[in-house]
Image 1 (cartoon, rainbow, N blue to C red):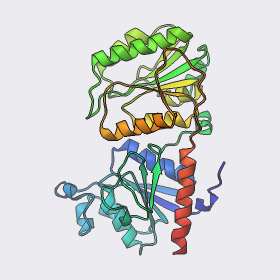
Image 2: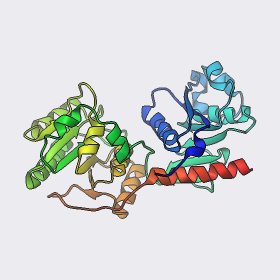
Image 3: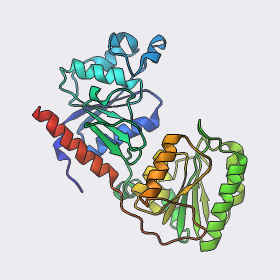
Image 4: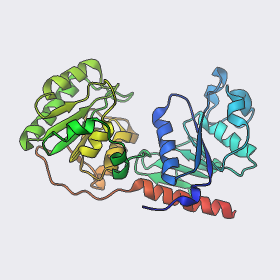
Length: 329
């Protein structure tokens, strides 16, 4: 394991909009990977008349936000980790208030020049580029074999009873770019059922809020049979258990974060096409396929050893080097 102990005595503020859990998780993942000693999350909300100004606003910043006292008062942190369009003016202002001593990291494309930040971490399918831009494979995440081992839940006992090979199936759903129709759900379920039958596999299936009630019913009707663990949405989510116990993982093509987290397990990852997504996500999946990191759902289970991907470690190493250069002035 790479040693990032130099960050143990550092403080960090995470700057995000409330409710953007996936965005916040990326910030948390970076802070955890760097092993920053003291991390606080500051939720920033812009006032109604000011929201359209983000991320470009660079004056009257404190008039634009609701929770001024909580957000902009010292003592200021060594490191700011921000993400989301409305976080940009607040994060830049905090850096200014710190006397430019806080090291400002923006996660994802900020939609303004990266030169406004000390470091930008953005996925390869985002168009932002520059000397202070670090490109990630996809979304930042917390997943590693060690993390999964430490975060097993009571579901693991049931999953151990399933005969191998075990295939985790991570199903998303409709997006702003593509509708996950009932016909899509039926075709997906039939493809997975054929794969299960061809290799006598067990299935571990989880859906999401975007899957849809009718689509979930179709999937459950076709797939919820022998040697299948189908999470019904009640109680704790077995997502981490599925990733840990799987011999292979199927992920629908609507989610960058699920695909990235699946890859972090080191296991074979197959992409299920459930509709054409926007250009950025389509480029993301093209990049993965070109690097032989993912494949389409096969007709039979394959013993496929894909290249290793330790993206989070590489990113944190790059952050460390940029931070050292920053401290040198």
